[in-house]
Amino acid sequence: MNWEEMRQIQPTVMTMLEKSVEKNRLAHAYIFEGRRGAGKKQTALLLTQRLMCTAQDHEKPCGECRECKRIKHGNHPDVMTLEPDGTTIRKAQVESLQKEFTYRGMEPGLKVYIVNDADKMTASAANSLLKFLEEPESPTLALLLTENVHFMLDTIRSRAQKITFAPPSLERRAAIFLEQDINPNIAALLARLPDEWGGGNVLENVEWIVHARGLVIQLTEEVYHRPQQMLLTLQEKWLPHFKDREELDIGLDLLLFWHRDVLALKHRENDLAFPDQKEKLEQEALHMSETVLAQRLQWILQAKRRLRANVNAQLLMEHLLLRLQEGS
Ligand SMILES: [Zn+2]
Image 1 (cartoon, protein in one colour):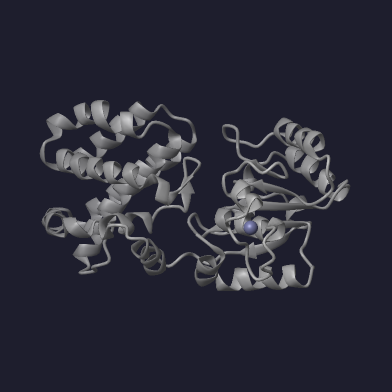
Image 2 (cartoon, protein in one colour):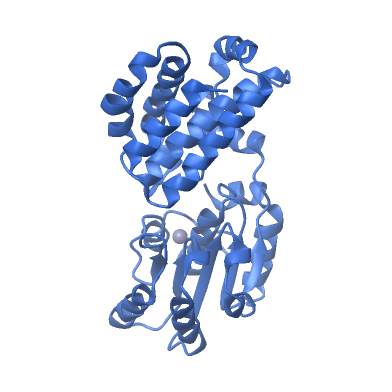
């Protein structure tokens, strides 16, 4: 996604950032707050590119120069990304990152921290980061990304400028994928998923999603019509494809979308995540009451929460499938 595309998705945020850059009035620290998929991570990278781009276009980053490319691929020496190690971001992580900046920072010039899931910073990690921001040896910008701003420490919230991202419109997101010649069935799913995962841009994950989608269609068919097969499919196909927590979370999202489609059809709504499965989903809608559907959606959401607590993937999935299959 480039600057122009992001401006269409988040016009308020991008205009605000543009003005601050143009007037040279960027804050030292920003909290980018908004729902998953709103484009926070992408905006952080675009802003960093804009500040470091060597092509002399003052309106937007070129995306092509060495600086822009290194930022995009996550290997720019002056740009550091912090993520939770397990469930928290610890002080040691911040410190080792600062050490690395000191080693690498031979040249003056801007340094950027991008902190994903910044609400997961422990108090000591946050203090350590703030201290660094307050006594920078060279200009430093911290971009703190979060879906849960209310979990962030007051000390950080009071010292960073908060920028709220609008929830992305599905239509807009799907349109962007269609423009890139993505199959409409895949675009419908990508539009509902976060901007990136597994360290890659969604576009790099198209093949993976095609396969994931097939598995969700197969597994739901088995859960509701051929339950004797579902655990085998789980073992032999599902678990090998959704290999880690992040991927399994996407798998659960897809299961959630499938059930939401059934619910949408009960309400005669047509904006589906699985548009080519409409006939089949309509059949399912005839057999599932709204109460049962609501319960199933709850169970999937609950599985997503348990996943965050590091529950064993196989146990979690077996438990969920059996619950779904038993239904009401
Ligand atoms: Zn550039």
